[in-house]
Amino acid sequence: MQELARTLTYFPAPRTQKFCSQCGSTLTRRIPPDDTRVRDLCDNCGAIHYQNPRMVVGTLPVWQGRVLLCKRAIEPRLGYWTLPAGFMELGETSAAGAQRETLEEAGLQSELGALFSVIDVPQADQVHVFFLIEVTDPSLAPGQETLEAHWVEEADVPWDDLAFRTVSLTLERFFADRRAGQYGVHYLALPPRRG
Image (cartoon, rainbow, N blue to C red; front, side):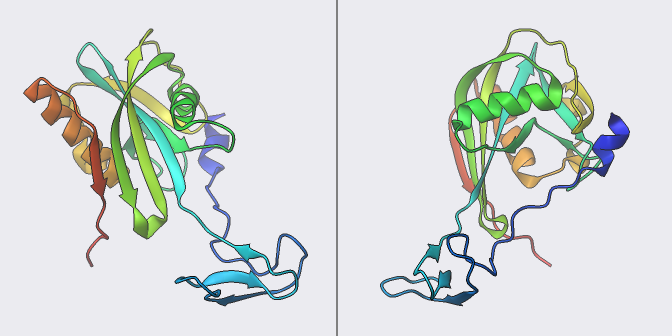
């Protein structure tokens, strides 16, 4: 099962399309009337194909002062540590998606807590949303997208080996809030990487 997981790779749908999903005609890229952005347009049927950000939903599980980290078994960032998270599916709420991802990646049963962080990642066309959760049973059973999962103290977080900046920022805010004795909701917009 773990060998299969290592071969899985995320291939998002292309951000630009070549053919209309309504009639199959070739699309053109231009700014439609009364719009401000370049879109994929069908000159045959008139369809405008809008592209919207993808939602990444996840949780920040805490058990007896330790946080749960999962080591990724898939690209991108194979072998790096992350919070349980993934892409929200059609037909589910962000909260339900976050719980599903936590169950799929760590085998962790939980009850949803408060919204904790919302981080815009415009350079990746994504929005990352993390919820605090109430852990009902700390037993872990990592799924095929996770090499291993561990409960770690703040001092043992592998900061240099975290998979994504959104995870680092969420953990930094969590530990700061915990020291302050009060948890807030954190909104950030992630600037592009330099260099």
